[in-house]
Image 1 (spheres, helix red, strand yellow):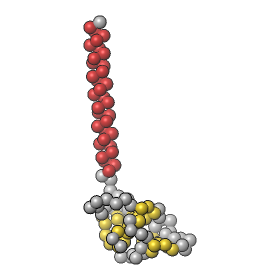
Image 2: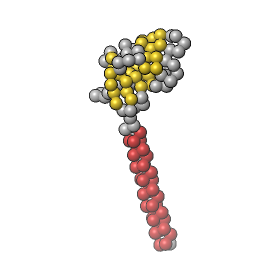
Image 3: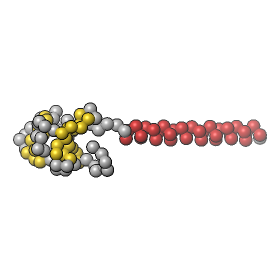
Length: 110
């Protein structure tokens, strides 16, 4: 009976330690995802167009052509390959693939 009690206690303690390590690994994985640099894109912020490449941000001075043929001008005008024209709004972001996304506002970021 004592052996069974000791064996079950050891099993429970080792299982608890295993689960604790899994949670810690999961938290570390989530933290590393949050620290990933943003993908390369062009973004409208404070009424200006900015280019983000390799984690560096600089003001856009010349048109950028995306991989799908869309062209983004330095004033925020977007011209698609089909000829459709639109204007980027504050917080709009276009990835180099040509996919448009609205960026979430973050305090003190950019």
